[in-house]
Image (tube, rainbow, N blue to C red; front, side, top):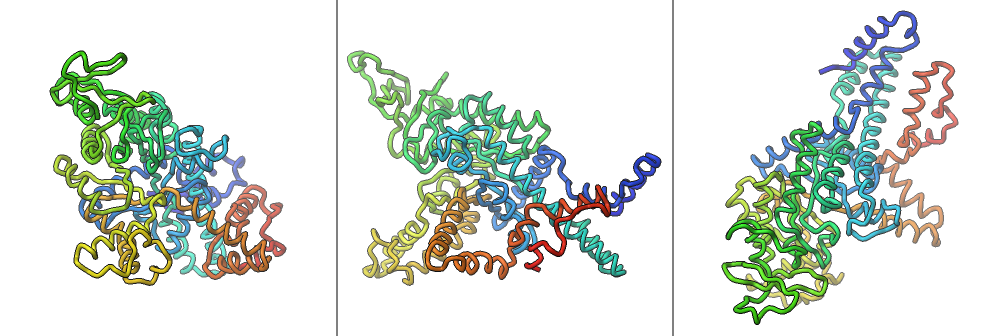
Length: 532
């Protein structure tokens, strides 16, 4: 492993070999620029982060308290600020990832304007966002290292060899802001070939982990909305294989595939599965179809479809949309079959989309899956689509009632009311929310917890509060008191927004390229100096 000093020495040897032509090139500056650009390509990033994620998966298998977390991002700056904040508050990026949400790409990144989560946005914007996220994370590295280099120069100028050595050690042991991204490819944006092509783009942009769902591409719905339509297992497995081939073709041999099942809330299928013999995957898929058993040809009308399922002739119920319906109450059985099948055919992790955050419900399904695949583990969507307060207050209410406790002071249907915010029930519910991720990691096999679109909501909330104050009676104080002053008090780096946008990096380069002739932006008249 090279060090800052060894990179300087290597550069010096190379420069010397060029004779006088490279005399103006500084070995130390060359070493600095190299350190600030550790990852040269997206594939470098994908290979590096895949190793991190695989190690974290193994660590979780040995100790379920070691689960991982991420927050969804819709812009490179958002991802950059998350990782800068994590390093600031926790001194490490350990087990903290980023999530790229297809929902947020559709709602915030499409040239068509805001779109619902139905795979109508430009699919290339998904790979584009991955590249953008890593561009901002790489700049976070360059910015942080640039600060260390300037500190090193100051220490050397002051003749403080001890401090210089300490800073050089920080440079050699610098922890990158580059972390794994769990990237949403929806249902693949087409057939298996389309899935393969997009997966390649995403991996080339830096994705080490791709999440794909078992919905029909052209009928795709948000996982927390109605009208979801699943595909037979063989169709889904073809797309899993397509993603694996993409990883292998690009040399990311330990790339991670997350197989998502929407079957719990999906009551429809577009296709009747191909089946060759009783009990095969196609037969199992068809066995969940709702319909009427046929006793004679008289039971069949013009246009009816008849299949053999469960050893009998079944006429599946076909809707006006030309979709077929599953029997009610079969969702959990279909989820379990989906998950086992995916893990047995190349997927690494599971994603079960649920209608509520309930540890017991998730654990019941995972325990059934683990009877067949003992190390099965999940990525779980801690979704803003859930009303977390209401759900957990109802869970606590039900537990109290079942235990014979007096719940007469509460109206279960109205537990979201602010009148309960200080109640014992609300306190218990908040504690269950606080420990949900740790509880679910321990009891329900959840390796990775994410929130799909948190910054969509935080941006809306903070903007609403700012607009109310600034355009109201508070005027400029609404901004200064609630934004800038808080940035200063809390040490938010982007209070110096010129620095965050790369002004100091640009000044460094001007000096490297032009020496004393460099026209720098960071002089005494730069108002950023007001922030210390």
